[in-house]
Image (cartoon, rainbow, N blue to C red; front, side):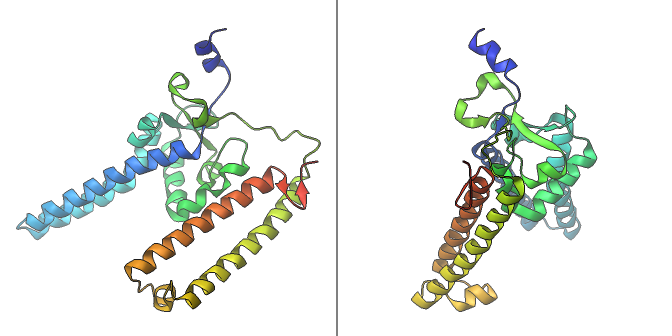
Length: 240
């Protein structure tokens, strides 16, 4: 069997977070271009009515862009660029209702929705799990091995029970939250982060950088704990 034939018969390739991040970045850039273009047109327009029409149109486009394209073509322009597509668990594209629900959950949870990817068999975020969908490689022949995973198996007798892994992971998550608050307190004492920024979101440029870096590090730590916990790599629930 040739490599090309093998790529088509080995089963679905589930996109890694790097592929999904690439798609998000392009869609974000397109959204920013649309917003700035609409603002420029509205500021130069002499009609309040035209400005309102532009505003409503932009909101409608931004709200329907992802759900409609996921329903119609299996993905946004970002998904096409990242060689990925959203697939219903029953096969094919999502229904419009599912695509709308998926977008709504992702919009509400934001980056937190992706924390479950390392703990699921098919690299599913929360919005994928709730809508019974996956993000797969669109064209396997154009994908590199580091861009996807195949379905993980949990049929390993050496793996601790799901309940034990979940409980141990929950304990580590609580400790991570306490550690995060401890870091914030240390930053406040050191003068690297102001109380006004933390309490009232009145931040200087330096505050913003420190706050953003701390939040990103916290999210990465949470994702690592969830992934390691579900794969039996945390002390207290390790794979034998």
